[in-house]
Image (cartoon, rainbow, N blue to C red):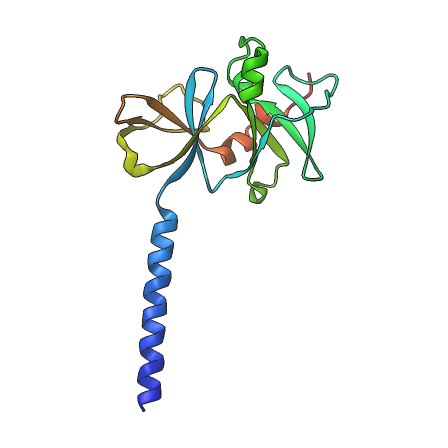
Length: 175
């Protein structure tokens, strides 16, 4: 009888711990990046690994924002210049900007072997560091999530990488 009660107590404690872990995992966390002069939040659950900007093999007859392909840990990834994708008028980066640039891969669960060029990493952010948030502007792309403002007054735009990777404009790399 005591063994049954002990087992039941153990099951209850495990269920409570599992619920606590799931609640903590559900809280929003992002990788904060700089793209051009804009601040973006990439959901950690949709982001993959971070790499220094490496040799990128150019692919002919592609959109200007498609930088080419890169070998990252033995896998081939299409490389998208996020700044040029969102702003086709954006110019090329100078050498100093290229030295700071990083590649952020999309999470393998999204099913897209893609890396995004970002200008700088700004660290990790949790929802608690922002003092306000608003819905994306009415004319914003579908992959824009909420807009946040931190305590220093900096505006941050959330990017839903899953929606981004599913847009037809993102998938059509041919020129």
